[in-house]
Amino acid sequence: MDRPVAETDLEFDHRPETDQSFENALEKARNGDRLTVEDGVELLTTGTDVAGIDWRRKEQVLEAADRRRQEVVGDEVTFVANLNNNVTTACTVGCLFCNFKDSAHTFEHEYDGETAGFTKTPADSREIVRDAVSRGIYEVTSVSGLHPALVLDEEHREALEAHDAPRQIDYVPPDRYETDPGTYVDQLRAMSVDGVHVHSMTPEEAAHARRGTDWSYEEVYRRLKAAGLDTVPGTAAEILVDEVRDVICPGKIDTAGWLEAMEAAASVGLGLTATIMYGHVENEAHRVMHLAEIRRLQERVDGAITEFVPLSFVHQNTPLYEHGVVSGGATRDEDELMIAVSRLFLDNIDHVQSSWVKYGDEGGLKMLTCGADDFMGTILSEEITKRAGGQYGEFRSFDDYVELITSIGRVPVERSTDYEERRVIDPDDPPFGPQLGPKADGTPLLEPDERPLPADD
Image (cartoon, rainbow, N blue to C red):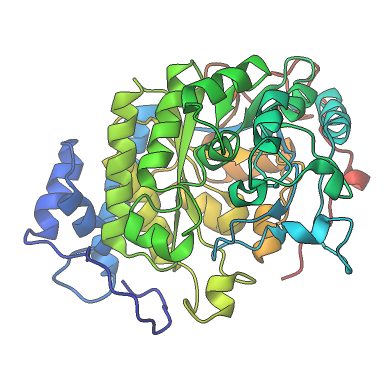
């Protein structure tokens, strides 16, 4: 309610207003009753009868969420040994919340200038992942820009090249670019090294992989799974309310398209995660409506969503901030309430993640007392948040995890992507390193002299 937002002409149909009391919503949350959207709005705003966030009420919500967390998953805090390998920053969508992308035309041979971005070939991706797997990681996450030369596979390329107006369907042949990214199938096969778990192909990327055809999302995800895809990150969700999407990402698929893709991925046997990206132009009603969409989706996919990841909008260096649409991101109070209400509202998703990339160490630990139970992963590379102006670095060692998690009296647990494998770590038995991966033997991922320098404040 008190997040700084610039004066804009935005008028939304949905506002954070209800005709019930905060106390009734809190009582339902404490009792474990299923919450309505109106309940969620009351908890997220700390009552629509007050201006701003009421500190006393906020603490009551956080306490209820932390108690629910303990009941559902106990005192374990999980994390995973993973690598981010984003294939390209080239993109044509132009989302106003993003500073990860670079205009795709700047990668073409004929462009008279330089680009700060990158594109990796499948061979590049394989080398990067192979090195990381040899160090002990066992998950590679890949989320990339929508490069006009990227296609699902060679059959897809043939279909797009036969189109009368390929640029109208966002296709440019790879020979127009300095670097050929290959196909999505090529990239996934390249990253499938020694049984590593490949977590990739968001609904937006799946839409890009079927553009210009009448192929279903099921067909696209079936081919991707055959190429090595294991699970689908539920990013590109932002806010699953179209009046918000029309402002911040009008070029992306709509809410119905995102949900259709996620259901299709689950239908071919792929696991899912889900996210929300909050703290920009949306209000609390939109946030809870998003939670309701995720809860209904989890029911339709029979529990395929393993975790929910609230992502606080990093506003620096983004068009929304530079154009004066917003004057900042979410406040720390809002961050804490978003974690807490996610835990209370999503009664069919066991795990809620705290992002140290978004919140930092101190903030990330605080979120673990507000209902979160997962603390992300080692992330040997993290470009997206950093390019948007994030301040909190790009690598987390097992030593860091053990020290941080035990500092709040919780139990550090190494986990697999799907949470099926777990290893409780004894803080009195160093050295600490991954053991769940195909080549993991407990050795630290990086030696001290390989660790990245801390980010500047």
